[in-house]
Amino acid sequence: MIVSGCDVGSLTSKAVVMTVDNGRSRIAGSAIIRSRTKPQQSAREAMQAALDKAGMTVDDIENCVGTGYGRGKIEFVNEAVSEIKCHAQGAHWLLPSARTVIDIGGQDCKAIKLDRDGKVEDFITNDKCASGTGRFLEVMAKVLNIDLSELSSLSAKSHSPMTLASTCTVWAQADVIEHFNMDVPIEDIAAGINTAMAGRVALLVNSLGVEKDVCMTGGVSKNAGVVNTLEGLIGCGIKRIRKADAQLAGAIGAAIIAAEKMAA
Image 1: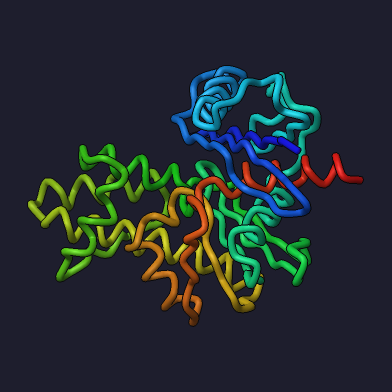
Image 2: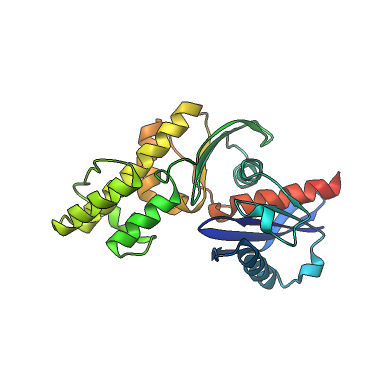
């Protein structure tokens, strides 16, 4: 069986092509691209890139599920499913022991509690404010004129992290500009940004309640500065995902759901 999942987010779009044989699933091809203005274009480009890596064509796909904020605009999917359900299934596939999943997307942050089968028991989201989301980090990286990925490596060199006066993206941006113009070392500013992000996410996670094992999905899971600080704020370690890129969790979950629909 060949299935696929497509996760169109506000910052990045992800696609996974998966083969399923006798209940065993394997990623044949995957792609992560910068989201375009139109979700339809993002979906097409991401899926084509994943198909190219798998050495397949769209005609090989037997079932495809879409997710993400742009899921309703994906033209080639058989069904659209919520991000919560897809990230839960994806996280369970990536780390079967996971009971708490923290997903930081471009425009929201989600904390999801799972049962042993990867089903959603409870969840909480923050989609009313940019702080605590990937957009917050993106805005701050632009202010510092650095690549988003550099926030992690720079913060690791910090000896005296700055403290942001506010976690509001607008006020924090002004705060970062002020510190930058005062010649505060950029690594200390980066560390302060990551700490502010972690603090905002920790409030959400702690309000849900932490149950081990904990893992992170989404692009921010690659930012060691945020992850390491968040561990201290929630009082437990966060398991690193090794099986595949954690940013693909939503697309992986969508592909798994597509396979389940075929088997039903």
